[in-house]
Structures are given as C-alpha cells and as structure tokens.
Length: 161
Image 1: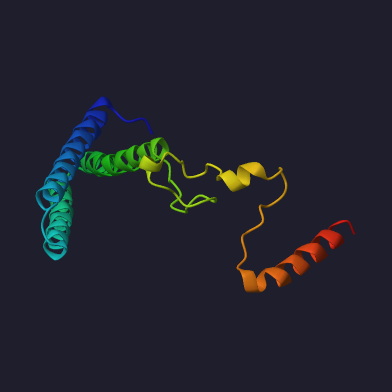
Image 2: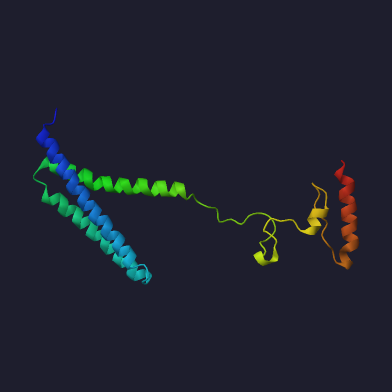
C-alpha cells in the first residue's frame, strides 16, 4: 500500500506535534529539577513526581487532540517516542565519555598527604633496599624475636625444597 502525499503530510504534522509536546515536557522536567535542587529531598521528590504526572497528562492531551485523524495520531505517537529514545542515546554517549570509575582503593601503601612528598604507591626506604622478589623483613619486638628468627630460618630452609 503506497501512502499518498497528503497522508505523509499528516504523519509529518503529527510527528512535529508530538516532538513539540515531548520537548516541552522535557524542558519542564529539567526546570523542575533545577528549581528544586537545593530543597529537602521529600519536597524535591514530590515536585519531580508531579512533573512526571504533568508529562503523562500532556502526552495524553496531545494524543486526544488528534485522535480523529489516524495518520496524525500515528505521527504524534512517533514524535512522543522519538524524544525518549534521543535522551536514552544521549545518556549512553555521555556515559561512554565518562566511564564508571572504580571506588576501590588501589593496592599498596596508604596515601600520604601531598605535603610529605611521597605519592601513594612510592616505595619506602626499607622496600628500596630489599632485592626484587623478596619481602622486607618486619621489625619484631624483643620477646618474640627468638621465635621469629626460628620461623624465618625454617622458612628459608624450606624455600629450596
């Protein structure tokens, strides 16, 4: 079935009408979000929920206004849906520009204040003196030193096995 040019014009008019209503809805929602940014969370949430109710009401009104003309109604529905998909694609692209950054701390020594001149992953002097592949030996208090030395001797002896 080939659509005549009049039907195409009806669909284009409907599409533009739906797109206009969708842009107005989006602009109103952004306005409400910015207006309520500094207010209490309950009040801001109520305002945003009311804006969504207004959004759905305006979508319904836009469809009711053109319900007698099937092709204009179809174009209006497509225009209302297009803005939603545009926003999804826009948010996806923004998410790709700023990917999720892990909140886990990096392995290594804890961060030191920048004034100290040591970065978070810089080696301490004890670690710099040790040979690669070996762990530096921790300092042990006097009473446990004998036990520590026996364990250390035993572990070095078993290392070759």
